[in-house]
Image (cartoon, helix red, strand yellow):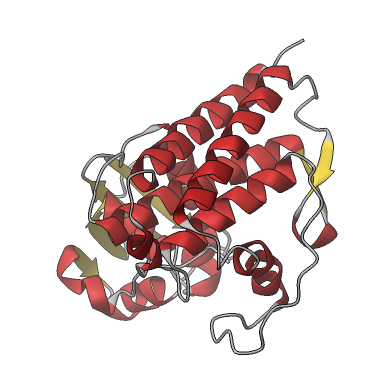
Length: 274
């Protein structure tokens, strides 16, 4: 048996992004591994450590036994402490140690994917001791690795792959969160619609509709009389949704029409990643 067809797109996206990460960091000299990234408190080394650590967990490796320092200002909750463990344990690793472990982890994961015969609904280990399906785990890895590839590109000044396989998975996952952002978090009025017009490497138009009971749904049909319209480029969209920038910091890249209080509330609640 081989990888289930419904999992192939996630495997392809992960492979594309992780190979790009390897190409980005392989030529870096020691000092460049300390460059700041858009992730609070994380350097280039830390981001690569995170990628390595979570893929090792996908391989079934035991988590490191390690005590975190108490002065990590960016670690404020249990989820962040969980993620930080794989990062902090590698903070003193050299550039050659980092690149060799990344390359070895990629080799092991590619072998695992080639031999993967489990069904998409098979249960696997998730963060904080939870159980999730294999499909959820692979979707998360494809999402996570593409976003961190983009973090590294920002830190290193090497833009690219904004329309790669991982970008499409990230787009779909972020769009799935929009109804809650608009209807619940931003409190859009009942029987209203909000249009998102996205341009750039990935172009799409989506309408979030709020029904009479305040429930949100999303579709690709335009609305003739939306309560608000937000127009922005794809890079700004995902960086906002992933909490990499604030709306104020990129206000010159966002065009809004309609109810200003509603658009402000939407942008204030736009970040949906942990």
